Length: 229
Image (tube, rainbow, N blue to C red):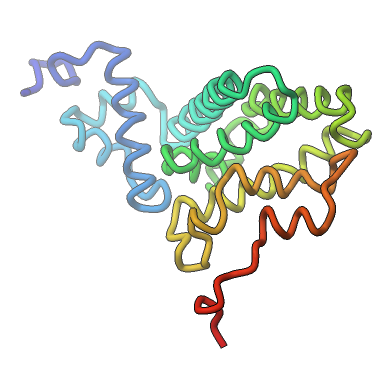
């Protein structure tokens, strides 16, 4: 499509459509380039609109990154809601489902994941603090931990400290999931998001499985011909 006269935007783009389209392309660039290595002018050119049209939606690149970060955490919360609905009413299943939601979000939204948790340098200081944007997603984790504590499944203790511990495992797994996990020997055959969630919870369970049960379930002895000298 060609630009209409003096419109500064591509024909067929309504205001909201262009706003969303700019964000979609920006996320694609971030995923492809492993970071926000693009200008607003380049972003407009990729969509076929003038850079002045881009500036009508975002004052500068920091404003765009802030909007994308907020959108990303909102989408992460949506993934949480979906996975917990699948898990049903069991408190432990719901807590483990949050790990799966986190990893699935990272795998399916690599650009947003990088932006939400990557280092944006000087532009980060101009954006909202991530904890403020992440309130809903973090609250789901806290509520799930408290539900498990009330059910006697998880040991008592500060749920915020427990959340800080629990988030590290899926975050590391998610980081590898957006890259080549085979390079570090973390294939789906060896470790899944669900398995990682279960293992990470073991130290926090009121009635943890025995070492023998843990070994047989999660770390079975390998077939002899797979063992390398």
